[in-house]
Amino acid sequence: MSLAVLHSRALAGMNAPEVTVEVHLAGGLPSFTVVGLPETEVKEARDRVRAALVNAHFEFPARRLTVNLAPADLPKESGRFDLPIALGILAASGQLPADKLDEYEFAGELSLTGDLRPIRGALAMTYSAHRCGRAFVLPRASAGEASLVRDAQILPAKSLLEVCAHLAQNKSLMPYVAEALASAQPDYPDLADVKGQTHAKRALEIAAAGGHSLLMAGPPGTGKSMLAARFPGILPPMSEAEALESAALQSLGSGGFQPELFRRRPFRAPHHSASSVALVGGGSNPHPGEISLAHHGVLFLDELPEFERRVLETLRGPLETGRVAISRAARQAEFPARFQLLAAMNPCPCGYLGHFNGRCRCTPDQVARYRGRISGPLLDRIDIHLEVPAVPQKDLLRQTAGEASAEVRGRVAEAHRRQIARQGKSNSSLATREIDRWCRPEAAAESLLRQAIERLGLSARAYHRVLRLARTIADLARNEAIAVAHVAEAIQYRKLDRMA
Image (cartoon, rainbow, N blue to C red; front, side):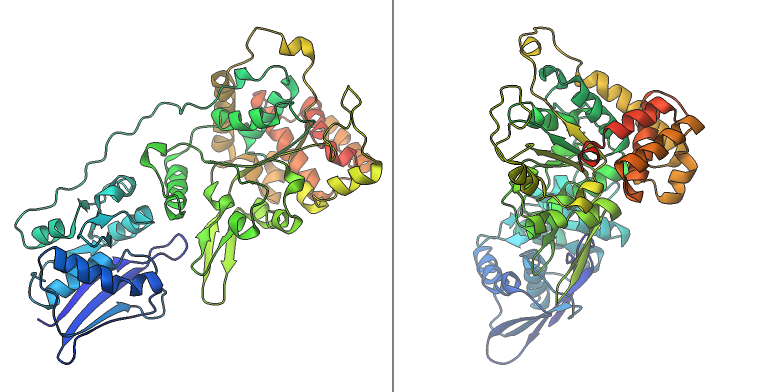
């Protein structure tokens, strides 16, 4: 047989389209050609595959060798095609039986010794292979991630020789049995560590219960970063669908996904020097950025005004739609990006505006320019504007611990369950018609809201966000009706609107 056909997978955004690997041997001068829109790392497979076959004591055919990766218009990247190419050469040259190849899909990068190295996107590829009814052969190091797909048949291997022994029916590969993942709550820093800041803790609880975005403004050393680090510990538990979608995105990132972090909400905190591509995603072969890697988790932007303005403006669309569309000349990709934005900033360039020690020497123009680095449309999309003042000395010296994260998380989880039972989604995700249905305030509360709109000049978007916040506050209070107290508390979280 001079032709062998195998199945593998490419990555296009979150999808894993099927790739047919066709290997043909013909007469003529010895050559090795890879066609089908391969990128550089796929072309380099020629040298890796040749060395791996020789070091595994197979014969590399001295003939005209052509490898076609179909479909030809789908770009192919990474070293995941090394394994199917090597197996195709062995099958086409008669060194390996080809009758069982159609039952499997293969992916794996080969070392020069024939060992298999882990691959990126194993979870997405396994999910697609499972839907096609094929078993998936992949490196052992990637099997834990792939096993998150329930009922998928996963055959992990350490080396090319193990895969060949399985196909030759000499020694079968054992299906991967996933280890039981811990169901206990992840060990996050405890909210009880933060002294004082009762108002800020209340705002965090509301943000966690309804999935709202939050901006903290205050002098240095008031606990903004401490509060943000403890925020994931009070979020409601992830559903199975949320955990799988988040894990799939993590597996597409350069850092990969660790199975022991399954069901743990991601917490991403990029430095303020991050570019727009790092935040949104991109590249010639589009990869997810920080906002997609924070899907169903938290994106924390510390020192918010220090980010470039054009970088911050890229957040506007995803905060509204929960998705990121990346367009390049050669290809396009779309990634989900439904994250909770947590941001922190100082009130002025020196950080001490309004501080009790009177150290601030910033002029009004300097303060205005500093705050002007964050555009009005972006601020309008942030639900909660929170002032975090300096902690009084009596609170710092107090020995009694505050409320623990576990207690707050219990109330948050109960409020979240009320939202899911009522409308099937969190309050922050409600569309306009759904707000009219589920967030209708009582008459007195509606009158108060109208007065606030007139005095603060709230936009239509800010109006809807106040209603969503009030709905969450009522859920935490176990009230179906949105009363005056709920609307009043929601209005006070529009601090930057009051300062406009």
